[in-house]
Amino acid sequence: MRLEVSKVEFNPIFGDGGLRGFCAFVVDNQFQFRGVGVYTNRNPQSRFGYRLVFPTRKLRNGTSINLFNPIGDEVRSQIETQVLPKIIELFQDLRDERV
Image 1 (spheres, rainbow, N blue to C red):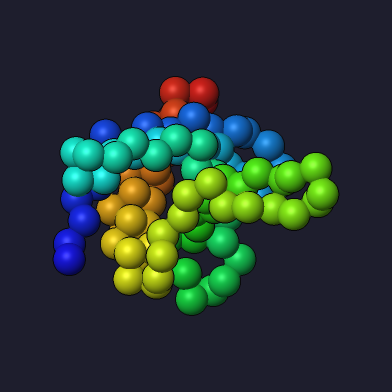
Image 2 (cartoon, helix red, strand yellow):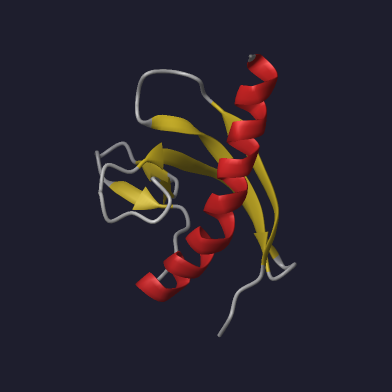
């Protein structure tokens, strides 16, 4: 099954840490995902230099639960392959505006 990702938005955070910002996107014109963290990826094998981190919520008892996330590497790869190049482009455009 091939996913179609569209309407990618990116809100950058310019700082020294690994968090670069948050993104939102739509999958198959059916589901909107917001609050997905964009972090630098220190893995030299990384195709894009960034990784997506899906939101979690910490419960009172200290347990963390995933709010939503891809189930399986293939789905994650499809999302990252379509989202990350657009984020890189948007991030560069924003950096160019700041100069």
